[in-house]
Length: 262
Image 1 (cartoon, one colour):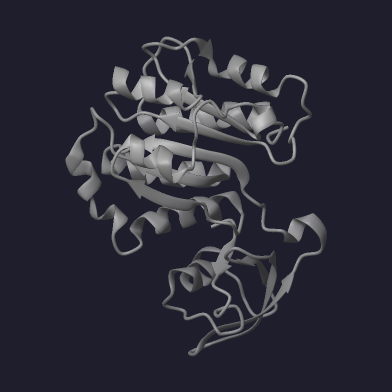
Image 2 (cartoon, one colour):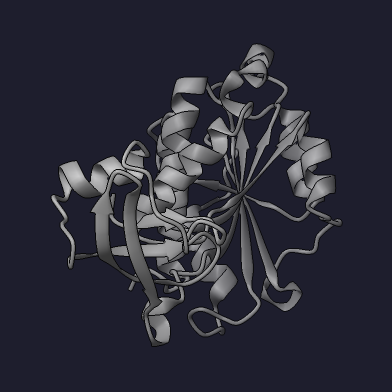
């Protein structure tokens, strides 16, 4: 636990010793009265919490936001990911990893070749998916949790993102990239370099939408739909990766080319 996160209404209240955060602070970090720990408000500031008392009622602490950029809670990057719904066990790892990377939105979608039963997973119920995203945010030491959306099929997903035909490019403020190992026309790294040519790193307002297929990949119908919407079909070499691996690798390449990992 690289940061202890609280809702805004929790930050002024004692933390129960039975809460997993309280147990971690006392049993793993071995914090005592007078000690401090890294804390933050979900969606808000990061800083330090100083423990004033530990008793049967819980851990009492005073939270002080950090000054300057260190207190901004590591804002998310302008990268939205479309993910073909993977196996639930893969989805858990995927959500943690993309949250740790700093992706701002995850759009889970049914696909033509995807297993429909995966979309019935209870991972999407009772806040379980959000918990995975929160775990990834804590791993990264941030306070901002990515948004998550669920779509029945790729057409619904693209419509929800408000994508019109052929609107990709820096002049449109958006790069559209679909990972594909069947009909790629350019490598992902080169597509990023082409899209960012003539712009500065971290160009204000520029966002990237990256699509990663489910375990059986995209159909020709879905590839054509991507092309109609202005996506480039991009490859990452000849090796076939699991969905969660491809999402992490693609996210890393994209964010590095945008200058965020330098």
